[in-house]
Image (cartoon, rainbow, N blue to C red; front, side):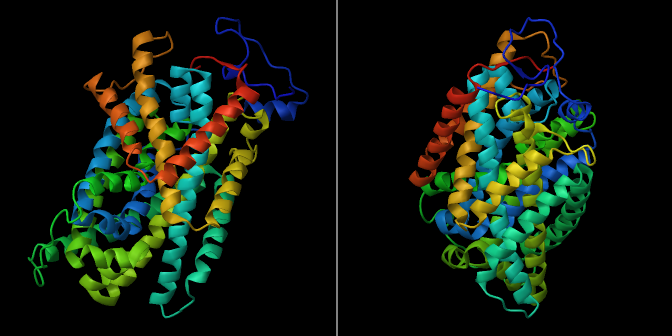
Length: 474
């Protein structure tokens, strides 16, 4: 089978102890393109912006109505459960990221800790999982764009949701091609403005919900549908916590990764988890669970109107627009890095990891990210997209924890992390069990699609990548 030659130190079909061999290339341009590395342009603020910006989009502006309809006010517990699971994974992932600050995140950790087969399945599943998540964010963006226009007196109807999502999805892909720094600047600005809006709105809404201003809200039974829906809702909303793992996918572009990676991953989960719980409290205090469920993906718009009138509604639709933009932008960036890392290891054709010499970005990988995303956006299936993304990420999260245990046990010579997971081995063990266990509470359709995706990736391994041996993290 004819394949592109892998880079030295990445995927090869030679023994790990073999001497270093220089690759043969046909032209100087090909050498520069294949051997180029991504520049380290992201700092702590950029890492936090990727994590927070990705997570805020779905958890605050899309999920409250869907989650409250399933679990009532106890949906706040669903988000809290998701945050705890995310933390039990973020800590092991932080250790692995400081030992292997390479693009690809969870794929890279698992491939070095558990081998080529697990790496292939997880790497390709991560690519597709991020595609599902990004499509979900873009559909949410389309709804908020339409609502923003409606608040400004321009009624266009929901028929414009998908076309707007497709247009901006293509635009974000092009933006990322022109440079990681450009995408990061957009992300930083959006997240700063978004957090300002949220702190003001949730602060007032929280005071109102507690009866300290305005009229006290009528209490609602905390878990009107019982305890089981709280867990199933946790499985749905776990998509809201994918942002911390997306930080790891751009580890190869982080400055001072030993410090910035752990702070970015753990810090983003803590900040966003608190915001989620407060949001559900404010939303269910404004309306009952049934009413929130009726309002669906844009329920928070009416919550804003309830507390602050038309100004509140406009603030929420604008915030939702910003949040879904930041989620989609960060996810497209992360999706391309997953493709880039898998291709660098020769588990996909080598040309997918080529870097644009003008902009320093993996333009082919960005195309392989943006294309499938636009196809899924056209389906408009919000909840299904979210849960399939959660399924594939939960598998990866569980295996990240297993990879940590494996690497700690073997302690290869190159394994020298700047951060060590506290509470080892309990933390990674709990993280693995919780991640795999949460999959069992998903809808059957999501489980079937998730298993089918993993089966296809396993088939690709046996067809294309079974003779590839991965070296350690060089």
